Length: 159
Image: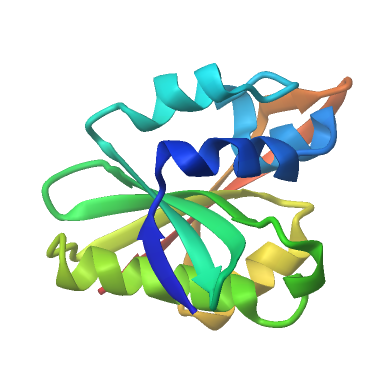
């Protein structure tokens, strides 16, 4: 598996990976409205502080991740997704995050990587913790979906 730069040819793939409004919010937070459109993607990923990637395995596209520059040495992992349902639960998410961390460290000279994850996304939290991320803060009443309060956990990892 390897990361490649996310290009305009990948936009439709990402749109097709987001099947429901709830999944869209779980994956993208308030950045994207459902249904996801190519125009929304263009508006977001062309921001200079965003570096988007697609995860490829052979000739298959299986995942997506972004690095958001927070400072000269700190990056945030955002919108982590294994879009290929067949690859979920098989360690592909861990590989995706490891590759993004490696890119941040070796190419961008990052010293710290942060992320935010919804508290009920236990599979993602377990993945991040297995890679050395630690919860640094918890916020409630910040994100509401369908009248449900979704707790947001902030996690960090020093590189």
